[in-house]
Image (tube, rainbow, N blue to C red; front, side, top):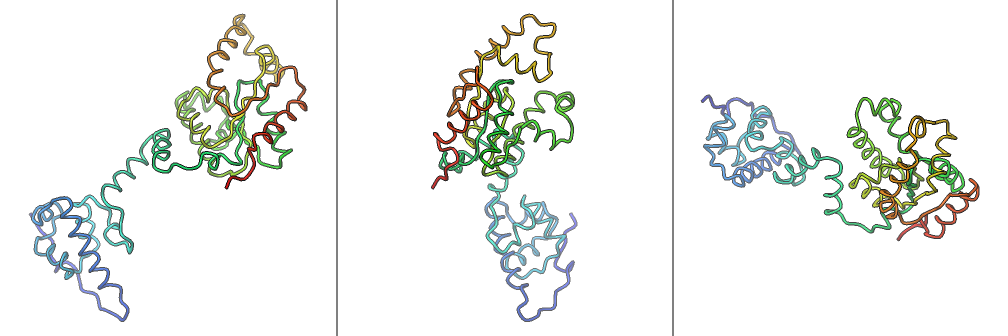
Length: 304
């Protein structure tokens, strides 16, 4: 094997206050520590990196003036990034780097679980100022959410609208292009984005988000949740009033299916901190009920 030696690099001219000696000394310690931690004899590291054993000995003794190319070879052989050997601060060790890499590659729901285990915080503090309206389509989430945001002078966001803006295509095309699984991933990402950007917000989400365990758990962790509910007939009537006749068109069993869906999801919606029933209520009456609920549960009060 052809080895690279100290003759492959040129010594630098030292100047007053030159950081070179300190850098070389730091590099010497870190290379030696990394090699020993991995249980690599110097000869093995030499074979892996292509840098001669004699030069590695000089490097670990603080006598080598290594080029960036050779340093990159040594770092790669130690399974480290070059910056881990050069940084002023104590670098993250190899195991931590691997964990960080695995974390970045993990699905969003796994990242949420890990974050919850490693950084438990006051639940009330994590939710303070953020309110999310959940419930089946037609309950009044979007209408009441916007009106409540205006009344409270805080931002209103509709999750599907945020997804559309992020992907730059309408929801129907998103579903066609990404599929259900892809949409749910975008949904989780949007939820994370909104909870990070907005400290005070009223959010309206799609009715099916409660059927996604990890996303719904994250939602309840980061938002105060209010179930906006109504009766199945009013659900259907309001959807049709919005101009969408699909729920009833050519499907005489639609009402029975809606009732079954509501039955299945009720235990999930019941996990919300509060409920507002809009059945047989005017929009203004329902808004007043929602604002009263927000005040009663002190969702917007600062948490110390």
